[in-house]
Length: 186
Image 1: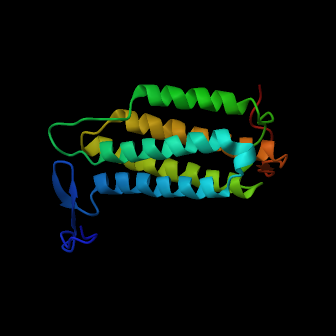
Image 2 (image 1 turned 60 degrees about the vertical axis):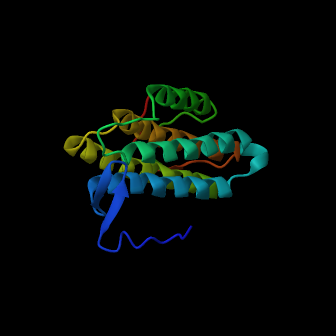
Image 3 (image 1 turned 120 degrees about the vertical axis):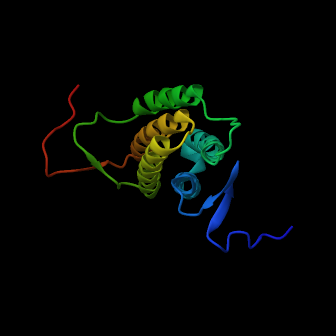
């Protein structure tokens, strides 16, 4: 099998259910999810397996879930078979609650920084937010799996929490935004 097909040379690509222009919002949405998946791979490479094996296991599963999300977003046909579910969102919420317990209390906004793995996870967070924005636009224009939007929303919260967790485990303080006052109070 050849990797190149030449079928996209005219600016169109195949989706599940037909062909669309490569700049179609559906393609932008699943392409951004694909980009996020690559950033998760980068974050995995920056993690220390001895202190982050649990996070690495989570992130590997998230990579599979992101591939499922991309498949859901690529469906433009009449018959749709979605893989991203509400249970996946709940699972992320449980992980967020679990890892948040390892973090110091949040009082100020946090800047991406601290350790290299934390920065990589913050990159994942911002790409997840961009993917979510693309899915919001897509869902206003075309039918799609609404659970993907919820999943990406929660996933960005997961990345924020886990970025703080890896700093806490490494005993590296988060980089706080200093130009404002205390914004988070218990």
